[in-house]
Image (cartoon, rainbow, N blue to C red; front, side, top):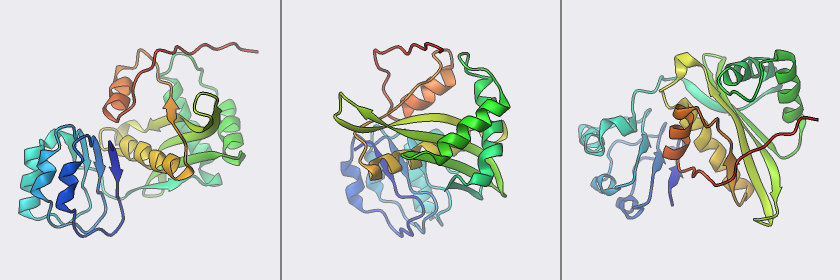
Length: 226
């Protein structure tokens, strides 16, 4: 197991057995009622991301976090950010966010009308999941996933796309929370695999996905425009 997401579950404690998950890379405990953390948490050698904001942590718990190294811990996330299913009234804001994304990715062009049409069709399609990050009523981030059929897996898989966060909200764990929630949805749907594409020149994006357990494949994507 590489990812555990228990955010907003009213948890009051984490069992010592967490130390047995030696391959764990991401642990999301944000928004619970946790006071103390087990010492065994410090024995997870591969843990790279810990979300712990929104818990009434004791001094001892904070010392455990220090042992884990502060740079991997998201304890400075801006408060009040929520991850929700997108609503129809969010679509225009989401289309504007896509313009930010396509300004970075070389293979796509910014066209608000096309982006709004595309995200609207996706919103109304079957087998989709659209998540938004909100802060004080404003959409500040988003991610989408479509259901595909894989002949290799013999079943459904999820195609993650359109992960983007407004610049003022970056490096606050918003993108990670969006990805974590989408992975939890994929698990709930029983998908055999989730996949995504990233611009090969976007070093930040490649590092982001690698640190969150995604592995680069030998496949290269090709487009044929009709």
